[in-house]
Length: 569
Image (cartoon, rainbow, N blue to C red; front, side, top):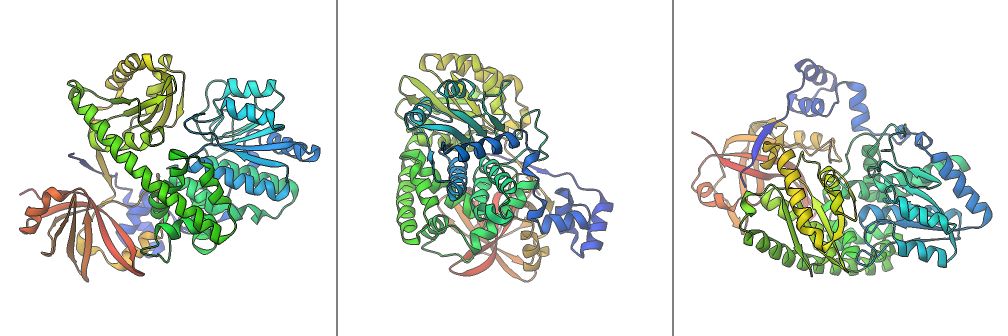
């Protein structure tokens, strides 16, 4: 699909000049920093050297004092406490973190993860009934609950109190919980609004430590879990999240939990790495943790993350690795079926959105399938499947279009929904699928910016290849960890050509380019259509990231080309 290359706004020249002089860096690095609101020495120091002392006071969060007081009361009274969380990476890391912390100071507690297929997303009736049967009187929900008004009301009637730790957008009415910890509450003064669900659990544990006089580094033991949640839930990589992710990745590399260590060891057993980065977490750890909840039960992921013995962790990791392979097979088959359904629809080419339904599609992978359809057709997309007598679905969006708001506008056709700007989940009666599809299509057609119907590559800088060297790349990588709000810099170089060593690997090309101090390799993903012109020595413009990669124990620089176009005459 043709992509639009759009250059980011150039920062103020005076700011760039000041950064160059103060930090003794190149103009290119100064521009990259200024684009990320790093404008002077002090902000650069905080950016390059995040400090845990700069984390916000957890008691600034609305209801934090109530949550801590209720947990203290439960501990004094010997009540049974349930730690309840969602089945995705954010939910399972959150449950692992808070259960590990709570069980270290109080033994009468347990954890619960809902079954994706039987119970669905978030707080479930089955989970509350189980809590009542087993004598739990306090439930602490993580990464869910802020919209579960009726269910938490039902729990209250049964004599079960709730503490909600969530990071999703609340509805107009908050649930009747003892405490609702969510920085996105309109009445919450907490200065940072973009914590992950696991991050909110971290803040609650931090508050308990502060209140109880425990050493402040007690909760730092769990920072690797927080980093995994931040990376895999695609929350922004700025402010407090960047501090947590920075130190979480340090822990992951120097002293990881046995579960995460075993998981990444298994993922990279054919090519071990000296150091893991955020990309490794997103593409290798995340999918394997998610695979448990997608195909079996997320307890498999929590069991791994809680494991203290290295040998047991390796066994659990091998099991998740196998489950993830099965997930890939399901995903490929359902994606092919979904594409066939789209292209069999005579009206599909003229539509602004995509909605497909398959009664027997595996519920655990339809979110990934929705992402694959967005990559292929670049439209706000919903994939539905059957779950009992209802239909359940996952939604994914394109940049610049709020799919949660779109679904909310059509909510008269739904039983429930929830999510973010870019991703959401929903449930509805099967007979209402046609009406919902029509309403969703009408909303998207009326509200989507025409420019957002074409994929956009927002690049940072246009630079000559000759200006790239190892020193520049190493300094640039100190700007990590990368993520939303601090994305891995994207560059454009014009009039380049391969050294004559181009190779075709199916959909991808392996290329090589001359730099001022040698040759750099590059992978051009999904660009195989350019193989013949490249081989003939034609000139191209390329849009790419510069990665510092590790393979077979050796580090090297590599261009990761995301798009390329023949150079215009």
